[in-house]
Length: 51
Image (cartoon, rainbow, N blue to C red; front, side, top):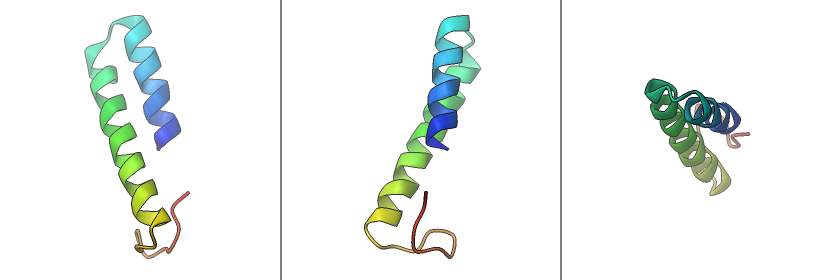
């Protein structure tokens, strides 16, 4: 999810399409939150790890 967010950020920035930029930011933030929750030991989606 983090990689997809970064890709959408880059594509949105290069093409000037604002919706891709916005979706990229949202996916990046959600991915980072899930990664942090998984790394501190909270179960995310029934899994102890998120990667």
